[in-house]
Image (spheres, rainbow, N blue to C red):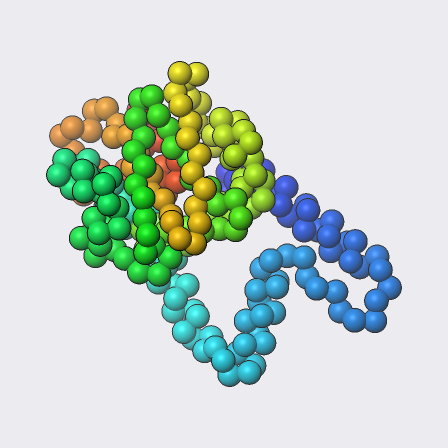
Length: 227
């Protein structure tokens, strides 16, 4: 894990630890509710399994699918197709959902999609300020930093500062647009194609595209670091 992601998670973890310590300082006869969202989710899952309402194997299968079989590779293929096929790119920007479904990527958490094109003068950044709405069919499961409170708040307050912490320094004349995902609408950033990639195949281009570039916290670069 790099320092950027660690800074977001450290701040979130410190807040959770402080809440836990505060809860433990009180002399209660009942058990304190865990402050860590992961612990709360685990407790809820255990209760549902105990009551026979949830099959743990089914949950494991869903997580494995989006974590290992989907991941960001689907979105990378969408981006690469848009880079090499102008007609597809036009369809993607006009109506992302059907265009993404053309490649076989659709499903829960990605029913309504909007594609945002980055360029020399406009840079799009995606966040979910209320929770962690994220386009699972094209990007897999959201990373921990995307769900952290510091990222969710600071991306709106100081987007350029957040981008700098991810190692992305934008010129002053580049407009930064922040998009807030919801349960009804999620976003896919179409990164700017790196210069010098004109002779690369669609498959080679897809290998360059990262999850972070499709959220908007990074650019796509060629091997060697050239964007």
